[in-house]
Image (cartoon, rainbow, N blue to C red; front, side, top):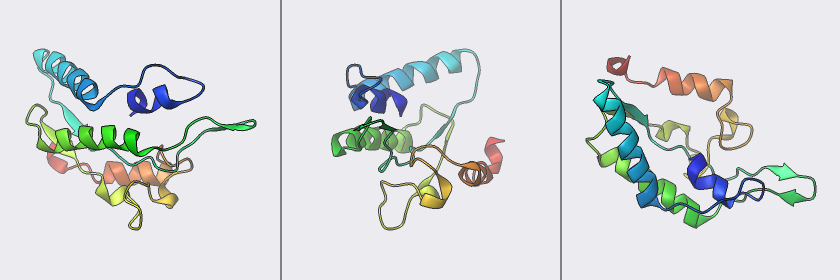
Length: 130
């Protein structure tokens, strides 16, 4: 998600990346790992609406639908791909009223899990992946 968000940040910047580029990079990384005999399990993308670093006098990042669209395309690819060995579903982390937002009790900044969110994620990794 950093590759998608950071180019839209005032402090990090860079050239925005589209869904095809993110998916292509992911496919290449998976292929390299598979060449080494590794099993690859991927997490579905968690929401990030509400995330925004506040700096003195400015908001460093603001959620935009165009960024969400890239993340959604990546998530769709993860759900449908057979290039990885399995996926970790994260829908239980989403707010029931706004599916693009993490549940507020699981995060402090709406992108990173707090301790409770981390534990919930770990507790929901399928047993057969361990």
